[in-house]
Image (cartoon, rainbow, N blue to C red):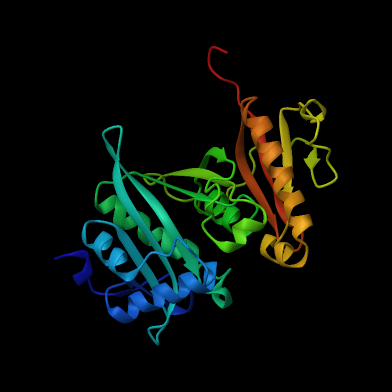
Length: 281
Protein backbone atom coordinates (compact mmCIF):
# COMPACT_ATOMS: atom_id res chain seq x y z
CA UNK A 1 0.00 0.00 0.00
CA UNK A 2 1.44 3.37 -1.00
CA UNK A 3 1.62 6.30 1.39
CA UNK A 4 -1.16 7.99 -0.58
CA UNK A 5 -3.49 5.07 0.19
CA UNK A 6 -3.07 5.21 3.95
CA UNK A 7 -6.16 5.79 6.03
CA UNK A 8 -6.35 9.04 8.01
CA UNK A 9 -5.99 8.72 11.75
CA UNK A 10 -7.20 10.76 14.68
CA UNK A 11 -4.12 11.42 16.79
CA UNK A 12 -4.86 10.85 20.47
CA UNK A 13 -2.65 13.77 21.48
CA UNK A 14 -3.78 16.09 18.69
CA UNK A 15 -5.15 19.47 19.76
CA UNK A 16 -8.91 19.66 19.22
CA UNK A 17 -8.89 16.11 17.79
CA UNK A 18 -7.23 17.11 14.53
CA UNK A 19 -6.91 14.55 11.76
CA UNK A 20 -3.28 13.93 10.82
CA UNK A 21 -2.90 12.40 7.36
CA UNK A 22 -1.20 12.67 3.99
CA UNK A 23 -2.31 15.37 1.59
CA UNK A 24 -3.70 13.43 -1.35
CA UNK A 25 -6.74 15.04 -3.00
CA UNK A 26 -6.77 18.09 -5.24
CA UNK A 27 -8.60 19.96 -2.47
CA UNK A 28 -5.81 19.06 -0.03
CA UNK A 29 -3.15 20.36 -2.41
CA UNK A 30 -5.10 23.53 -3.19
CA UNK A 31 -5.33 24.25 0.52
CA UNK A 32 -1.59 23.67 0.85
CA UNK A 33 -0.96 26.27 -1.87
CA UNK A 34 -3.24 28.77 -0.13
CA UNK A 35 -1.49 28.21 3.19
CA UNK A 36 1.87 28.87 1.50
CA UNK A 37 0.48 32.16 0.19
CA UNK A 38 -0.99 33.06 3.57
CA UNK A 39 2.29 32.33 5.34
CA UNK A 40 4.86 33.83 2.96
CA UNK A 41 2.80 36.21 0.85
CA UNK A 42 1.37 36.27 -2.67
CA UNK A 43 4.77 37.31 -3.96
CA UNK A 44 6.37 34.13 -2.57
CA UNK A 45 8.79 33.09 -5.32
CA UNK A 46 9.64 29.66 -3.89
CA UNK A 47 6.10 28.30 -3.74
CA UNK A 48 5.99 24.52 -4.24
CA UNK A 49 3.27 23.82 -6.84
CA UNK A 50 0.74 20.96 -6.64
CA UNK A 51 2.45 18.86 -9.30
CA UNK A 52 5.78 18.92 -7.46
CA UNK A 53 4.11 18.21 -4.11
CA UNK A 54 2.41 15.17 -5.58
CA UNK A 55 5.49 13.87 -7.41
CA UNK A 56 7.82 14.20 -4.45
CA UNK A 57 5.26 12.54 -2.23
CA UNK A 58 4.95 9.56 -4.56
CA UNK A 59 8.70 8.90 -4.50
CA UNK A 60 9.13 8.87 -0.75
CA UNK A 61 8.86 12.50 0.28
CA UNK A 62 6.79 13.58 3.26
CA UNK A 63 3.65 15.67 2.84
CA UNK A 64 1.53 15.49 5.96
CA UNK A 65 -1.28 17.77 7.05
CA UNK A 66 -3.31 18.45 10.17
CA UNK A 67 -7.00 18.90 9.35
CA UNK A 68 -9.93 19.92 11.49
CA UNK A 69 -13.16 17.91 11.47
CA UNK A 70 -14.37 19.97 8.54
CA UNK A 71 -11.36 18.88 6.44
CA UNK A 72 -9.86 22.35 6.58
CA UNK A 73 -6.06 22.32 6.54
CA UNK A 74 -4.62 23.80 9.74
CA UNK A 75 -0.96 23.06 9.00
CA UNK A 76 1.36 20.95 6.89
CA UNK A 77 4.95 19.71 6.76
CA UNK A 78 6.76 18.90 3.50
CA UNK A 79 10.21 17.45 2.89
CA UNK A 80 12.37 15.33 0.63
CA UNK A 81 14.87 12.57 1.33
CA UNK A 82 18.25 12.16 -0.34
CA UNK A 83 21.62 10.56 0.30
CA UNK A 84 24.55 12.25 2.07
CA UNK A 85 27.81 10.38 2.70
CA UNK A 86 26.13 7.08 2.00
CA UNK A 87 23.17 7.46 4.32
CA UNK A 88 19.61 8.71 3.85
CA UNK A 89 19.01 12.24 5.15
CA UNK A 90 15.69 14.05 5.10
CA UNK A 91 15.46 17.75 4.29
CA UNK A 92 12.35 19.22 5.90
CA UNK A 93 11.71 21.98 3.39
CA UNK A 94 8.51 23.60 4.63
CA UNK A 95 6.20 23.71 7.59
CA UNK A 96 3.35 26.18 8.02
CA UNK A 97 0.44 26.56 10.43
CA UNK A 98 -2.60 28.80 10.00
CA UNK A 99 -2.09 32.10 11.80
CA UNK A 100 -5.16 31.60 14.00
CA UNK A 101 -4.03 28.08 14.96
CA UNK A 102 -0.48 28.81 16.10
CA UNK A 103 0.87 28.08 19.60
CA UNK A 104 -1.55 25.17 19.96
CA UNK A 105 0.95 22.36 19.46
CA UNK A 106 0.17 21.75 15.78
CA UNK A 107 3.78 22.23 14.68
CA UNK A 108 5.00 19.67 17.20
CA UNK A 109 2.24 17.29 16.13
CA UNK A 110 3.29 17.57 12.49
CA UNK A 111 6.95 17.05 13.31
CA UNK A 112 6.06 13.98 15.38
CA UNK A 113 4.14 12.50 12.45
CA UNK A 114 7.06 13.31 10.15
CA UNK A 115 9.49 11.62 12.52
CA UNK A 116 7.40 8.45 12.69
CA UNK A 117 7.09 8.28 8.91
CA UNK A 118 10.84 8.72 8.40
CA UNK A 119 11.83 6.16 11.02
CA UNK A 120 9.47 3.66 9.37
CA UNK A 121 11.36 4.31 6.12
CA UNK A 122 14.77 3.80 7.75
CA UNK A 123 15.73 7.48 7.85
CA UNK A 124 17.42 8.55 11.09
CA UNK A 125 18.43 12.17 10.44
CA UNK A 126 16.41 15.23 9.39
CA UNK A 127 17.72 18.72 8.70
CA UNK A 128 16.14 22.10 8.02
CA UNK A 129 16.70 25.79 8.54
CA UNK A 130 14.81 28.54 10.34
CA UNK A 131 15.17 32.25 10.92
CA UNK A 132 16.96 32.70 14.28
CA UNK A 133 14.83 35.79 14.97
CA UNK A 134 11.56 33.83 15.00
CA UNK A 135 11.07 32.95 18.66
CA UNK A 136 8.21 30.53 18.02
CA UNK A 137 10.31 28.41 15.68
CA UNK A 138 13.38 28.51 17.93
CA UNK A 139 11.28 27.22 20.82
CA UNK A 140 9.74 24.41 18.79
CA UNK A 141 12.96 23.27 17.12
CA UNK A 142 15.40 23.51 20.02
CA UNK A 143 13.23 23.07 23.10
CA UNK A 144 10.23 20.94 22.16
CA UNK A 145 11.92 18.73 19.56
CA UNK A 146 15.48 18.76 20.88
CA UNK A 147 17.12 19.47 17.50
CA UNK A 148 20.71 20.74 17.50
CA UNK A 149 22.10 23.82 15.78
CA UNK A 150 24.76 22.88 13.21
CA UNK A 151 25.61 26.23 11.65
CA UNK A 152 24.63 29.87 11.22
CA UNK A 153 24.26 30.82 7.55
CA UNK A 154 24.20 34.57 6.82
CA UNK A 155 21.85 35.65 4.00
CA UNK A 156 21.25 32.06 2.96
CA UNK A 157 19.12 32.96 -0.05
CA UNK A 158 21.30 35.85 -1.20
CA UNK A 159 19.71 38.23 -3.68
CA UNK A 160 16.81 35.83 -4.26
CA UNK A 161 15.16 35.58 -0.82
CA UNK A 162 12.56 32.93 -0.12
CA UNK A 163 9.90 35.50 0.57
CA UNK A 164 9.24 39.17 0.13
CA UNK A 165 9.41 39.71 3.89
CA UNK A 166 13.02 38.46 4.00
CA UNK A 167 14.05 41.33 1.76
CA UNK A 168 13.66 43.69 4.74
CA UNK A 169 16.44 42.17 6.85
CA UNK A 170 18.06 39.44 4.75
CA UNK A 171 17.58 35.69 4.92
CA UNK A 172 19.95 34.58 7.68
CA UNK A 173 19.21 31.05 8.88
CA UNK A 174 20.18 28.55 11.54
CA UNK A 175 20.78 25.05 10.17
CA UNK A 176 19.58 22.37 12.57
CA UNK A 177 19.88 18.60 12.68
CA UNK A 178 17.38 16.30 14.34
CA UNK A 179 18.42 12.82 15.46
CA UNK A 180 15.17 10.98 14.83
CA UNK A 181 16.27 8.03 16.98
CA UNK A 182 16.12 10.22 20.09
CA UNK A 183 12.73 10.79 21.64
CA UNK A 184 11.80 14.48 21.86
CA UNK A 185 12.08 15.73 25.46
CA UNK A 186 9.11 14.76 27.62
CA UNK A 187 9.44 18.19 29.20
CA UNK A 188 10.89 21.24 27.46
CA UNK A 189 14.68 21.13 27.35
CA UNK A 190 16.30 23.80 29.47
CA UNK A 191 19.79 25.23 29.55
CA UNK A 192 22.15 22.85 31.32
CA UNK A 193 23.87 25.68 33.16
CA UNK A 194 22.32 28.15 35.56
CA UNK A 195 25.49 30.20 35.91
CA UNK A 196 25.05 33.95 35.51
CA UNK A 197 25.91 35.03 31.99
CA UNK A 198 25.83 38.31 30.06
CA UNK A 199 22.73 38.97 27.97
CA UNK A 200 23.52 40.59 24.63
CA UNK A 201 20.74 42.90 23.43
CA UNK A 202 20.21 45.80 21.05
CA UNK A 203 22.22 47.99 23.42
CA UNK A 204 25.29 45.79 22.87
CA UNK A 205 27.99 47.33 20.70
CA UNK A 206 28.72 44.65 18.08
CA UNK A 207 30.80 46.94 15.89
CA UNK A 208 33.94 45.89 17.80
CA UNK A 209 34.10 42.07 18.15
CA UNK A 210 36.92 42.40 20.66
CA UNK A 211 34.46 44.18 22.92
CA UNK A 212 32.12 41.19 23.23
CA UNK A 213 32.42 39.25 26.51
CA UNK A 214 34.60 36.14 26.50
CA UNK A 215 32.75 34.33 29.28
CA UNK A 216 32.08 30.56 29.00
CA UNK A 217 28.35 31.24 28.55
CA UNK A 218 26.59 34.12 26.83
CA UNK A 219 22.95 34.80 26.04
CA UNK A 220 21.66 36.65 22.98
CA UNK A 221 18.19 38.16 22.97
CA UNK A 222 15.60 38.16 20.18
CA UNK A 223 12.21 39.95 19.99
CA UNK A 224 8.89 38.26 20.71
CA UNK A 225 7.58 38.74 17.15
CA UNK A 226 10.05 39.81 14.45
CA UNK A 227 7.23 39.97 11.87
CA UNK A 228 5.52 42.71 13.86
CA UNK A 229 8.83 44.52 14.25
CA UNK A 230 9.48 44.39 10.48
CA UNK A 231 6.05 45.82 9.80
CA UNK A 232 6.25 48.58 12.40
CA UNK A 233 9.93 49.59 12.19
CA UNK A 234 12.17 48.19 9.45
CA UNK A 235 15.27 49.87 10.86
CA UNK A 236 14.70 48.28 14.25
CA UNK A 237 14.29 44.90 12.59
CA UNK A 238 17.61 45.41 10.79
CA UNK A 239 19.28 46.15 14.13
CA UNK A 240 17.99 42.85 15.50
CA UNK A 241 19.43 41.05 12.47
CA UNK A 242 22.77 42.82 12.87
CA UNK A 243 22.93 41.83 16.54
CA UNK A 244 22.26 38.14 16.02
CA UNK A 245 24.44 37.87 12.92
CA UNK A 246 27.48 39.40 14.61
CA UNK A 247 27.03 37.50 17.85
CA UNK A 248 26.40 34.06 16.34
CA UNK A 249 29.27 34.30 13.88
CA UNK A 250 31.66 35.75 16.45
CA UNK A 251 31.07 33.03 19.02
CA UNK A 252 30.84 30.19 16.49
CA UNK A 253 34.40 31.03 15.41
CA UNK A 254 35.46 30.65 19.04
CA UNK A 255 33.97 27.22 19.63
CA UNK A 256 30.63 28.17 21.15
CA UNK A 257 27.47 26.19 20.45
CA UNK A 258 23.78 26.91 20.93
CA UNK A 259 22.79 24.76 23.89
CA UNK A 260 19.23 25.90 24.59
CA UNK A 261 16.62 28.59 24.10
CA UNK A 262 14.41 30.35 26.63
CA UNK A 263 11.16 31.87 25.42
CA UNK A 264 9.02 34.50 27.09
CA UNK A 265 5.71 35.42 25.50
CA UNK A 266 6.06 39.16 25.96
CA UNK A 267 9.82 39.63 26.03
CA UNK A 268 10.79 37.32 23.19
CA UNK A 269 13.57 35.08 24.38
CA UNK A 270 17.25 34.39 24.30
CA UNK A 271 19.65 31.76 23.04
CA UNK A 272 22.13 30.14 25.41
CA UNK A 273 25.58 29.92 23.80
CA UNK A 274 28.22 27.88 25.58
CA UNK A 275 31.90 27.36 24.83
CA UNK A 276 32.54 23.67 24.27
CA UNK A 277 35.78 22.05 25.33
CA UNK A 278 37.14 19.91 22.49
CA UNK A 279 38.98 16.68 23.24
CA UNK A 280 42.69 17.13 22.75
CA UNK A 281 42.37 20.91 22.47
